[in-house]
Amino acid sequence: MSEYRPNLVKFPATFYVISDDENYRRDDDPLPYREVLEIVRASDDDEESDLQWEDLCEAVRDNQSPLSLLLLTANSHGHAAGLARREFFDGQAVDAARRAVRDAWNNL
Image (cartoon, rainbow, N blue to C red; front, side):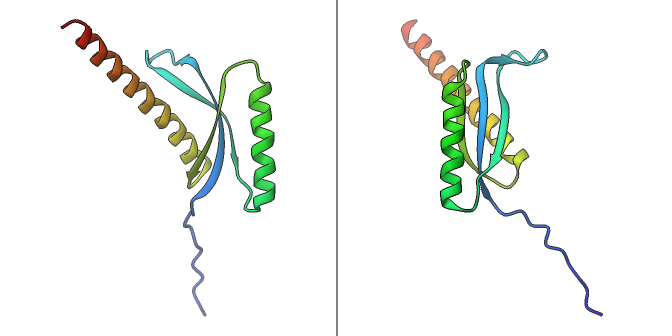
């Protein structure tokens, strides 16, 4: 009898992430936070993937609040959400560092 071994490896895929970045804050954390609203795995078919992207771009443009549409390579939907939040946090940290350097330079 041969032993069956399932393949549990997750391969990277392209994900589209829609998020709201407008000063969303959690109650217990004073830092700005990216609220991930939707994650869509891109189709493997190029034409269908392009249609998905266009539909999501239109949805983001038509929305009243300032939403972001990101294109990420991740292993899962949860991984894509984590990458989107980390990218936002990294951007916030860089902005804070720029402000600190600017303020220090102006106080010389």
